Amino acid sequence: MTSLRTRERLLQRLMDQGVTNFRVLDVIRNTPRHLFLDEALSHRAYEDSSLPIGYGQTLSQPYIVARMTEILLAAAGGSLRRVLEVGTGSGYQTTVLAQLVEQVYSVERIKPLQDRARERLRQLGLHNVQLKHADGGFGWPEQGPFDGILSTAAPQFVPEELKQQLAPGGVLVIPVGGQTQQLHLVIREPDTDKFVTQVLEPVKFVPLLSGITR
Figure 1 (tube, rainbow, N blue to C red):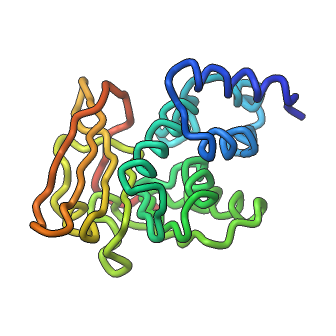
Figure 2: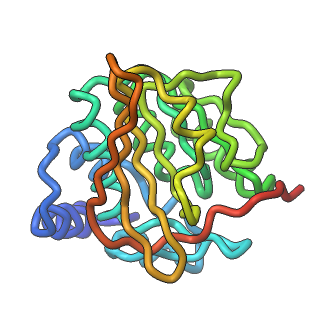
């Protein structure tokens, strides 16, 4: 059982790095990150670091989960109804989002990771998440448009398919690049139907790959 002190130390690190949204911080504090790791790594769950979850994928560091979630909420004006997550992975970012928005739609190309994430969401009693085994680069157009889209993997360029699944005024937070990556914020302007992009900060994510894995 992880001590409250360990979690509070993590929260302090996040605040020291500039995370200010107290709703996000509270969710990070109360989400049992150790459940999203194999038992051999669970003792490292509350470090501010990314950790392997198998299949060449990682559990993102708490800072970047908090930062991307904070950016998504702020750009959308603090209230999001329908959010698409590209790359369910362990389900940790999914779990954070599910506690802050009305409905989460999450796609994952690696079936065993999706199955584990589904079980964790069930254990945590989160029923506002729909999962799909699919190529994340194409999103989930049948469920769009979305008020927000968050990608946990990095394409070389922002996929046009994801931009077109944004509702007017919708926001996309996505890492972009190869060896060098930058976090991008894309906003679909509500009146002109144009897209405005801001480049925010350097990040490092696994690449967004095509093709699904059974």
